[in-house]
Image (cartoon, rainbow, N blue to C red; front, side):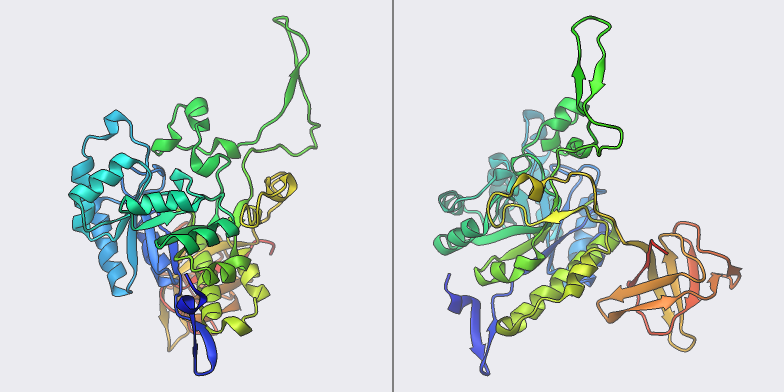
Length: 426
């Protein structure tokens, strides 16, 4: 793909004309609507069968149809993960399920197993087939193979480097999707069996229990007798270790990915909160739009990095984007990342005449707390909470009950589905 196909000079200024899709995860309908409201061009989700996140809430076929209708209003697309590695017993109901996905109006499915690829092309031909990252694609010849098999899009392995991405885009004319943010699997593109061994749950059929993120100790057996003792090799004050790596964060590399023509920038996290979804979608939306509008004069803002730190994250790193990372660059280590903010409330209503906001409480807050509002219609602003009232107008000493409906006065206008968070250090 040439530079001219990605950008053009318009009115004397180079602009990006091939803007990548921002693809955000959704574990349920609420998260889907939040993702689109906060800037997603497309959302991927899991159904109740044939996916890898059995604990994500997931969607019935009726939920999918509702999500598709909502997405259409905003020009967004919906993709469904059907990325298990199927065993014989998983074949029952597959054709009917794929026909149901097609009927719901879903744009595409994300697939790892050739059985599901073949079946979808045969029984649901209007549905795009996207190759899952589970297939560990990291070279252009494999990309060419899958193109010839009739796939519409290829999701690259998380281990693919920038140079590998670039060469694939140059040599194969097919849509390419790459992960830019979220959890990394310790196994090769998710091909892990730790859960199978440790909890008897098949991670490649939706049962991953994230064993790699547990805390582990090392012990030494000092004799072979039945009364042998196991001596810890760590001191009590030492940090426990996990096998999992840091989370992926390629926010600083988005310009490079845009310039080589990556078609879709994907965020991981179907089990994350709506606050995480909104925060990450907002930041990536701002970076993509700012760079595409004026790439030659683009300047990265520190506030974008600061914003990402306000949602629940582990330590982050660019992973394999610039090549194989060293141990210290990649391993999670002593859990040093500290989340700075808690999601405190979701805006349900705002009265322009009185300046009173109605919120659904999501975390404890009280008068005297400084809170921050954010959303796609407003610039972030902080506000000191003065008095809080319940739905009936009774004054409260705190908003202490989950999902409690509360009200208080704010100095600036807010909008439905804006969010409020508080600094946890106060």
